[in-house]
Length: 451
Image (spheres, rainbow, N blue to C red):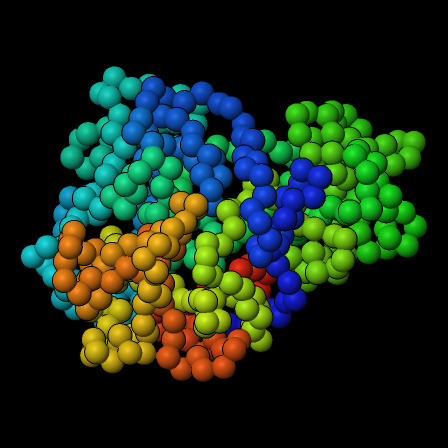
């Protein structure tokens, strides 16, 4: 069983130009993450997206994804570098990759099942295309040319309908799917010794070891007031002797020969009591905040935050925890089965034991009001046919207006009866990650230990 670290408070605020963690407050100014400019092939561009930061996109603004070679419980799937395993062949049976499920089980809806290449169109390259920086050209099994970045074949997703959508996959650890696809983008513009990771609240800054970076309200612009006993808890992020200020990055002179990094004029520190990677524990200390290169928009109404024994979660207007459904089928091409219109057999098996009426009762959709809207691309209102889960046609009888996160419907759980209940978290296969439900957790600093 996965155990989460209990936490006290979160939100979205801004402190002197540096984004801090607090999602209950009004949205911070739209500050976008800077990235390293590098040569790109014709027709490729960079779009700065809300959750994933800068990503590569094709000429139509469709995000580019990779499918890296990955180990599952009983085999390997994905692309080896320099090759594409995503073809026009339609998978018809399971592969037995998720033991103890045997191979050879017939997959649902074979008459309409798409191929891997139909769901993930290859990013084609002209026949005379030449390598550009990290961009290379590989040959597909059918002989056509495909762009690759850092050796990984690139694809778009049919789930992305508008420029800037990133609905095909995510780099956020908590919502990665088994053997999933991941958006590809340029390197963030940060000095050596820093990194940026995708979290629910935005693009979180960490050090080279993955521990969070913090700023203090007590510091002034390019001035550190953390001295003496403060340094026993908060370790300044020191800059090398030859480091120079560059754009949003400046250097603070702590003492003769002792130089400290500052981001957007706020001196940077790590927290000596952090026990997990990309932690937000330090932000529970009054006056201290995580650092984000950019943040997501505030939660749309009527959503709110609730405190649970496992952490802070998103809840509906009545305070019931909100759940996302995750699903990847057990075929060689690992197609997602959690988007509207995908085979509903997987979900109904988990939420209702094969009974759709029981499923709808135990896992009701989060219904949206008639005037509901969102200012964020992450949150949307969609109309679905509730029994099949497919997108409804205009004016369809019985259709429901429901809230969606990253394009997929949201649910509550009937057995959550008390404030703070999250009894439905990890219901499903492989702790809900292969086929099941997970709470929309607001903070990503949790333990992945299993018993």
